[in-house]
Length: 189
Image 1 (cartoon, rainbow, N blue to C red):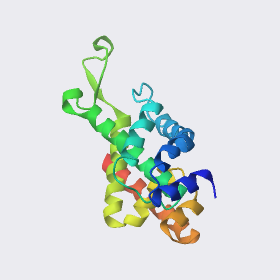
Image 2: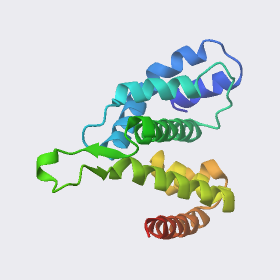
Image 3: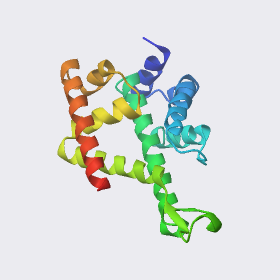
């Protein structure tokens, strides 16, 4: 049993010191996860990996008691928290009071066009909305995508977390990727 699994088990059993012991054990992995997520963002991102880790930690380790079904479940929850933070950040940047999805363009080289749509935040929101639609249609497949894509879990780990066979996890992964791709593409038309 790894140290992380042992501490998660102690937290599940009500050990008040377990939460204090958990952050130092998972911090480096959470930082790597945050860096991976931010690497997919467009250049000039104002959110830093450290801030993303700290905000995600506050969301997943807040005052509410949690029951973690192992290491994969914990990191899945962390990845979901990071995804939601990035979505909130993208929505904030696209809000009308912040330019409504337009980026500043130098007027001299535009030929009269003064603004153009920003892609990255819009694309992130398109993926998020498509994933929500998949979740309404098939919650297990949506959860599988979150664990696999956003948490970086392997097919084997996802199967364990969801309590399904590896073969089912592979089929669901193929289906979900195709379904999301089609939905996102249809939304662009």
